[in-house]
Image (cartoon, rainbow, N blue to C red; front, side):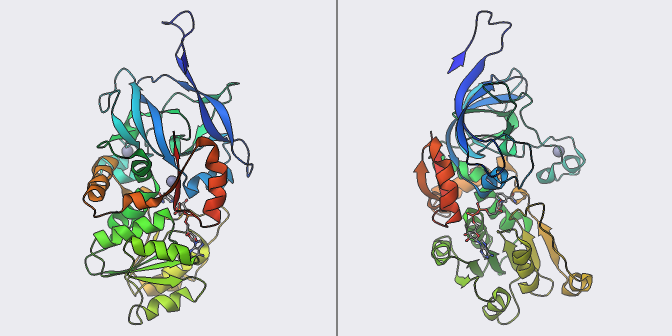
Amino acid sequence: MAYRPCFPSEVPVVHEVRGVVALGKGAPVSIETVLVPDPGPGEALVKVQACGVCHTDLHYREGGINDDFPFLLGHEAAGVVEAVGPDVSNVEPGDFVVLNWRAVCGQCRACKRGRPWYCFATHNATQKMTLGDGTVLSPALGIGAFAEKTLVAAGQCTKVPTVDPAAAGLIGCGVMAGFGAAVNTAPVQKGDTVAVIGCGGVGDAAIAGAIYAGARQVIAVDLDDRKLAWAKGFGATHTLNASQDVVQGLRDLTNGVGPDVVIDAVGRPETFRQAFDARDLAGTAVLVGVPNPAMVWEIPLIEVFGHGGALKSSWYGDCLPERDFPLLIDLWQQDRFALDKFVTERIPLDGVEEAFHKMERGEVLRSVVVL
Ligand SMILES: NC(=O)c1ccc[n+]([C@@H]2O[C@H](COP(=O)([O-])OP(=O)(O)OC[C@H]3O[C@@H](n4cnc5c(N)ncnc54)[C@H](O)[C@@H]3O)[C@@H](O)[C@H]2O)c1
Ligand SMILES: [Zn+2]
Ligand SMILES: [Zn+2]
């Protein structure tokens, strides 16, 4: 609901909504009243229709990203623009949008060199969303979409054809990050052999991306056989249970040489070490899983030199939302990409804490909050 007390020209409109907040490190999330300002210059107010539960939300709740509690969680979202600030022209009220967490600035040194997917000064809303008592909230990845409405920079709204919001929203983070890690970051070439370590939402999207890019073999690696079975549904040609020797297993499946590209969609020192070691000489290891700040990776430098090739990290799959989000929707509509298969279940706003536990138990690819 929105309230507009006595003097409309002087008092800003504030929308009072329910949102999922992580109040403290490791504590279960709770539903809180969130005050969302009306959009100012450069901002858009979005009525959220669906938002996926990503492992990154759990990283936030565990204090693994930073300590700026309280967090308004949720960042894989689709919805409808409700209002825009005075100078906004890229979207208008009524547009169906997927929210992105890298609205490029066009001005920084990366943008000016023609590499906007690296933008070093991406935009978020200027005004703050708060709890009822005025405590400023930190929106996860500058989005905060486990809420009935959220305030973002207008550039964070990417207009797409109107489709099921539960599936579309997933493009806004994990699916794009995985798909882009294979297609944009690696980039997988026609005829490459590829392995993906960790077959959650991000890893399965990387598998689909590798197939799209023309890989001739895509090996799914996970500790959980159920995840390996799902990975086949996204195009994996082979599977390997990570309880075995992963490096040897990957070599055995690739004529003894190792894959051309190994994508680590877990983000731990041991999985990145497997990616590093298993790839063929001069091969590429891509880190798309997010390590926590305490993790350290130590390696003899001669091995980095001796193995050759490339070690890359993938921020958001090096995507450009306006180019890549509509592409993924087109591929889905043409039955070339199983976007809807990422949606394991639809849950209410108060189901996020339980969804974290289901994620930890490996029962879901994505639980999606539907509003
Ligand atoms: N780089 C980016 O821009 C970006 C964007 C979104 C998410 N992420 C990160 O990607 C990672 C994966 O996210 P998700 O939502 O797919 O998570 P998820 O929990 O759904 O999936 C992780 C998978 O890894 C498997 N796994 C765990 N340990 C393993 C091991 N040692 N060997 C093999 N498999 C193992 C699990 O069984 C699970 O299937 C997270 O770290 C998340 O923060 C990165
Ligand atoms: Zn920039
Ligand atoms: Zn995410």
